[in-house]
Length: 121
Image (cartoon, rainbow, N blue to C red; front, side, top):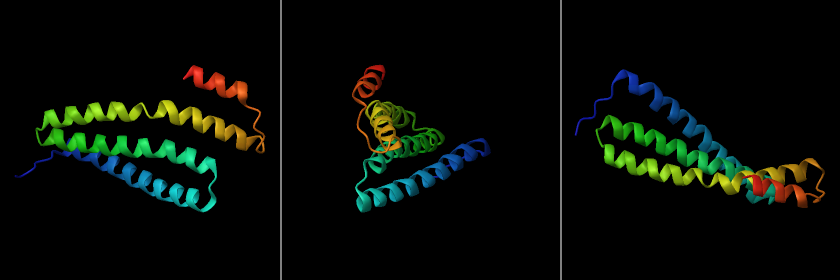
């Protein structure tokens, strides 16, 4: 099958592919750092980067499927992408708590703050 991609579709796919590559390098770096140091801050950052990697990759695939007139497959991927965004409900509060603990020098006196952040999200 021959795929014809118009010039107005090349720029978004190229930009998303570049972002996917940058996020993929970030996943490798933070995975390596977490394995080496076992610090929770690297794990929290990894939990932020991985859903971003998946959502950017799925968005690029959606654009390619749209160019191929495979709208039903693109619609199903859009639903999966919406589920991926729900991972941020857990990742963002975890990242904020770990970041603030490390910013305070390791003191874990964030009990009320952790509750406030979890309830607000």
